[in-house]
Image (tube, rainbow, N blue to C red):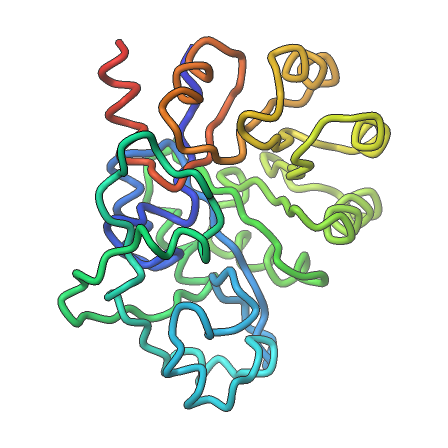
Length: 276
């Protein structure tokens, strides 16, 4: 069984992470997409991973006074233009990526952005886009900070995409807040919850025992099929959290891992296609 492909922040060969170009690229090669959300100083949700503009738009970061995302207004965020040069992934290297985090992938990024720029997407724009995607296409919405539940639910409800979304985080405080919120409030039909726990051990097993989880994320290469089966026995599916090397992709194809989150969705798609 082949895992479903989740494009981590979109197709990074087609656009800057979390931008419309990257999202549209993901539609061509993935079953779903993972995005990150944060809130501006005037309480608008945007699709952005980092807590500042420093990595993706250093000149804009300087222009706006080196402030954090939560200190910027929506108007200021919408004025930002991120350069494609240096922010797109180049050709897949032989043997894959030895490191996974975006800052460490810098050496693999291409300067061939033709001088073009991209703007930052609001969560409302993302939900409008998601509504138009094929029925089975889904989104993992990663909360990068606390206190986003009510605002994000209102937006997803407005665009009728609750059934296409999995809400999750890799931050334990945020995971717990999500779980607590939905114990105190009715969870909308179709909406699913997840947690990127990274490793399955005694601590994380105890943590998730009483949680309402559709999926749990485990770091690629750091788990075995018996871990997947343990989660399955508890009604939870597994997604592999990265590891973009073909040797891992081959192992995934023979496991019961439900989804694979990857920075290289297009390459993984072609690899799986050629396997069958």
